[in-house]
Image 1: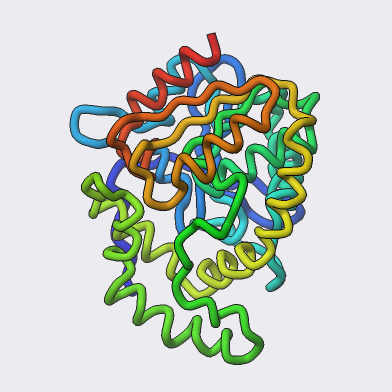
Image 2: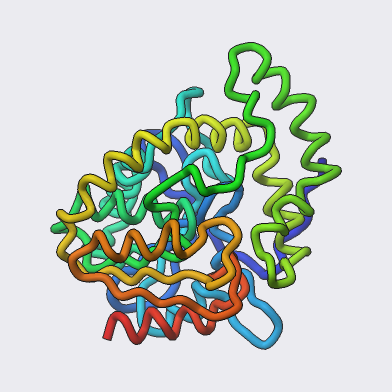
Length: 290
């Protein structure tokens, strides 16, 4: 399948962590701030600019030195081996990436599963974290989350066959439509989604997501038992109509478990908070971090 060009121009570079390239985008001056994307996504979520707006990276770069990157196994960052990663694995990888790039004590902002990684980072490295923003977070419970398509790809032998045969067909026929449901009740950004879905539907990327999600329930149980350890500022932001991470099952319970958390629920918004509303998201972060 051919890959559509980026909707917005990109100036990225490849950092290297443990011998593997990591696609990064770095922009702005000021305190460090890192953006972590969710599943079936990549750093371009934070570059997408709806009509009349700038992307989240550009908006935040007015006051921060912003780093967005493709998590290993997503976008253009390959991952070694075939094992799944937990949010803590991603947190330790991010810590090494930030050290290599000379970014210290960052504000860590994550969207969806990226919020899970942001929270794991703060739990593992509280002294190296200025603050956390968990947007549309996967934080407390997987039972309420929609089922990910084609779970059979994690099976031995059969899964390998599926990612090279069934997955490309599924992505071509239904990928954009399936991904667009997450943005309901708002209209999905179709041009952006088409490219993101093609990237996420590549065999290595799709396999990585499925293996990661298989490990997520145990990781969330661990994290829920530790949220009380966090005493740094946390912004929990979510869309009122989010069909993926409903406020009553994710954002509200998370805020209640944290010692110093502010909860923001945006009326009428779905799951695509930083993608569809980068200007408002940036303003909420500016107010939180004053």
